[in-house]
Amino acid sequence: MEKKYIVRLTVEERKVLRDVVKKLKRSSQKVRRAQVLFMADADGPNWTEKNIAEAFSCRTKTVENVRRRLLTDGFKVVLNNKKRESPPRSNNGVFLKGNTWAMVSMNNKIFGGSHETYSLFHCNPDRLGFSGTG
Image (cartoon, rainbow, N blue to C red):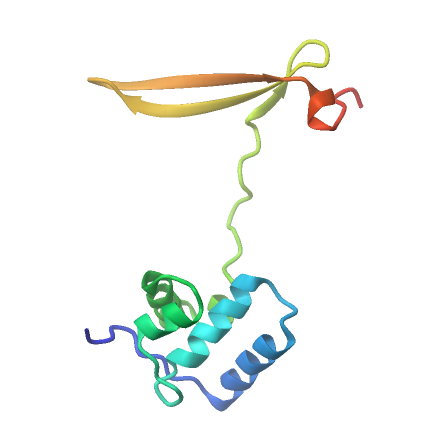
């Protein structure tokens, strides 16, 4: 299989990758991305996607995505991961009367048409290890 995204790193980029892997002070995802980029370098080890995936316990699709992101988004973005444009929604938990806390989840299911189903989970906050009263 011919490589679609060919990685060519500069001397400075290789040095940054070596430092990240050597220090292991960042997230495991960042270290793995650094290892993948270093081994995928065409002017360096130039490993295949399959060999990289086996060596670092990830999927070949992960290796392909890291290669693609390097070429489309740039070195800093692929190494440090892209920041979220908006924070995740956190409005799925609600306090009801008293100390009862409820988790509402919405599932879109299709039964001959589009229907929304809601699941409501009642929780006692004392059992969850926190108090809902302030």
